[in-house]
Length: 72
Image 1: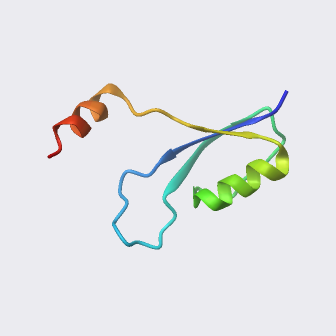
Image 2: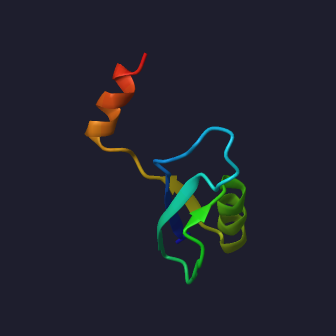
């Protein structure tokens, strides 16, 4: 069974920022230690490719989905 790497988008991302945009939430089925908490998508993809894991974006809760619909 391939492992899974769970991640989510950071909440406080400033436009045109050079800060990593994604936050690692957890790892399952892979013997892997990651020391960075915030990573770039290219870094997540490279790690997943090297260990044979699947990347899974965690869904946002219903509270955040309502906020997204209200934005104009």
